[in-house]
Image 1: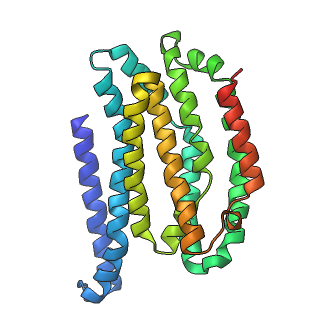
Image 2: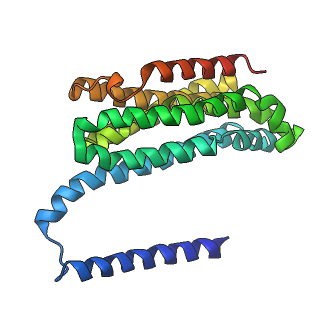
Length: 261
């Protein structure tokens, strides 16, 4: 495994060297200029720190569970098996988020109608299957893995609730508007909410408490992003979110969580 990671590191270095070579072919002579670097670094550094915090947030839940359930290998294994997002939801939402950033950067507020349309299309494609999988997880999860991991189901169901925030895209708009410093601050607040939530919910809810703290932290971060767009830029949620469809699907998802089949 260590050798595989060394190869991935070498591949990453080779790709970046190739990129620098190609840039040098287009822009000759290739040299760093302060007038170019300073504006780009002011945009890039907050995003790099945001990405780092995002990775830290994903790892924190596992660390908190391992620390709290020290010596309880079965309980920790059940948490790790359940602490998974729906792969289709994660892949499609992140892909759309990345595609929307240049759209906002080029069109500004003129992109919002298209964002609403693309978001609605994704809601229709992902939410129904997410609701169905959540409602029936007690049936298919033990068949897919084994009955030994039935304790993972509450954690898995809680992670399905991330669909509520994954399928709205204020982050793409904030990046397109170059408000990256606010994103970094919100990510820091998300981490603090996760840490506090895990400390409060773990003793009472066990491994499900870590999952619920993660969901709460994601919801808080997305709410802050929506709030920022509304009160800093005057952009209401209805401008880029199909609110009725999103609220309806979210309500059904919460019902499926509270009353699984």
